[in-house]
Image (cartoon, rainbow, N blue to C red; front, side, top):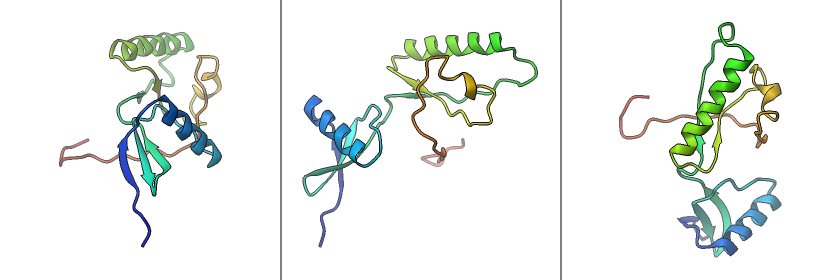
Length: 125
């Protein structure tokens, strides 16, 4: 019977580097990991819990100017930093008016991914 993967806290900088190397070898990136998945003594995954602020936003396509948008994003970045987050990201589909400007705003494209949502504990989203 094969060993099961288990989550545990990330131990140290050396383990962080090993995780980054393992993720890159599997064509993935490691983004602010807090826990690692280990199976049979090998790092096989990670999760980042509460380390990066995920910001969802809507700005009216006809009532916001480019300057309004830039200003609001700058204000959001300051708010996120005041909350103690070291980084932020927000979903930006290719169809968004923001998409062509994300790099100019200092954002790095991480990956194309669908976002999935689940309310925990019986609450409402």
